[in-house]
Amino acid sequence: MMTPETSELNGAVSFTESAERVVSYLNEHTPLTDWSVSRVTNGEQIHVHVHHDHVLSVGDRVDWNESFCSRMSAGAAHVVRNSKQDPDFSDLEAADHVGSYAGYTIRDDQGELFGVLCGVREAPLAEEETIDEELIRLLSELLSSQLELSRGIDRERRSIAITDALAHTDALTGLLNRRGWDRVLADAQERVDAFGDPVAIAIIDLDGLKAVNDTAGHAAGDQLLAETAAALSSAATRVHRIARIGGDEFAILANGVTTHETDAHFASFQAALAHAGISASLGAAAAVPSIATIHEAVAMADRAMYAQKAAARA
Image 1: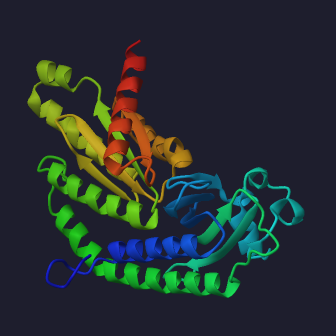
Image 2: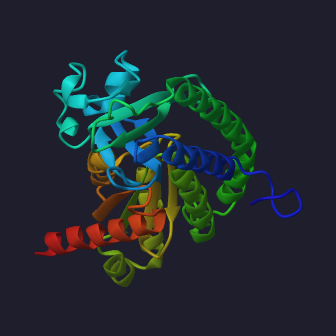
């Protein structure tokens, strides 16, 4: 637990602690076996903080439009005693393994849908079993308030951290260097763990830089690196952070990009390189809470990049 003497105030940590206390309490004091605080983004619902895993696990991803929570948020019941007997939920595929449900939405600091506080179990509720719907509503509203506070706390802290990261640049390309990149990754991991923020990574490796250096000289090689940085930057928006992390290796962090969007999202960077006449291999992967950390996503993107390079050679 943080104290003023040991650490700065951290909104991500505060929200995580609050969410985990809520799902733990509800697991102990309701008949539902699994409680979750989830994130809804880009058509996906991702379970971020889960207490017990009979039905739900951290990192589970579902199509938002095919979820119990989506139906609830659109006006269906907040408590479902028997999903197979409720016409608003019985047609869902998830009704085959979710017998009962309760949920309320969580709003972000802009008043928009952030996610859902929900509970489920495999069996329908028995006649004598009850769920205090007002309690679920109250706790979801408290989490919404905590989220607004946490995002506000972190806004200035993150701004300072990102400004510091952006100060660490590669002299040749002007992009982030390895130290700046590592700081950006640390910030992203914190957001993935606490809020389920979508983050994807791409790793790019130039084809033939050594040959350019050997045949045309290092000045020509440096020019190729600078042109690569310019091409990648031309495809970037405010959601991207680009770094040169090795001699001929570049990396991109993209905020707001989910797993199923990753390949299509980074295609614009590959197109920008091709338009500039630069031959390079690119691999991409996304971080998912409890499934793939940011560093694991980097490793998966690196493997995908080498697979693309090997395929091109073949």
